[in-house]
Length: 173
Image (cartoon, rainbow, N blue to C red; front, side):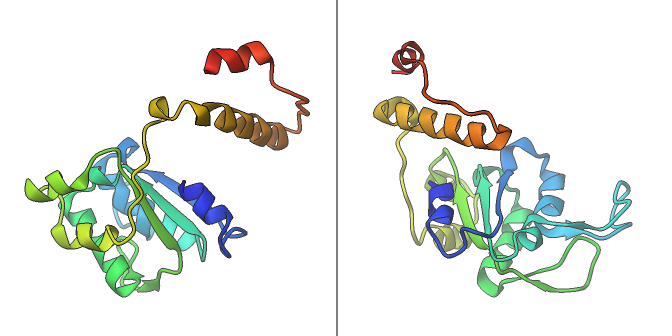
């Protein structure tokens, strides 16, 4: 859904960057989002742009936002409220121009109630919410997604695909 929003928007020719928050250790999420300068921490051997800077006027998708720790939540809230951030180890303020889209397979409201997710961040993020049923409950979408995936891979790898085998498509259903 986030990719579709990006692709039909005026930002479609700008980068679409996906950050799988759940796949990153908590101490690397901040560097991934905001970047860092050389020497900011032990393994920072060179400056690195974070996703917000690299996306330019594109879209940044934060998947599994529920795993963000309190410190990352505060910094993300600042980006949303002021549009500003600093790379780790830098005092240079950057202005975020990217659209932010977040996703979670969990309902964030219980996390707010348990004190694991900031209420102010939750309310900022919850301005426009889409509840998407899991694919297992939308079986008719599987064929559409499979066709799209094959088409995208065909273009990416320059391998023409005339059609998808009917037996394969039946197995997907």
